[in-house]
Image (cartoon, rainbow, N blue to C red):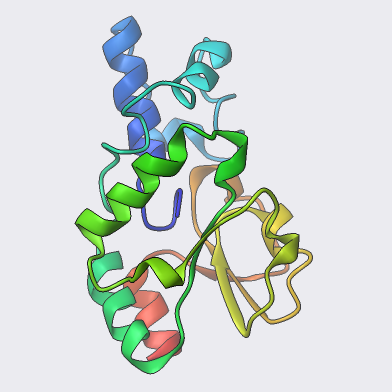
Length: 165
């Protein structure tokens, strides 16, 4: 979900600016860890434990339209390593229901590790989630993974549509 469907990069930027008055451009985050792009990474890390952080994230452009079409052609599951931030579980569930109403509760898997996941295709922003996956691996571009190589990369949901639809 995060950085693939939910624009967590922008959420970090917005919350950091609100907390400190300092605006960090997404362009300056390229190649850095998600929290390492900010002068106070501990503050950014704390956002992940605050109510509302996950529930108010913006939807990544094109994701609703393309995932709805993918859902007609494939058996789609939304997987999130949400257990690290247990308070995120209800927020993520409600966020999906609001923004992706065509995804049924049976298609949602909140887990601790995506090593458990088996399937034909995985679209993810983190190499740690793709490296153990046995199917087709698609790396969804995010500032923290711009230097990653060795994976099929997509920059947006239109590219996903071209590839899979």
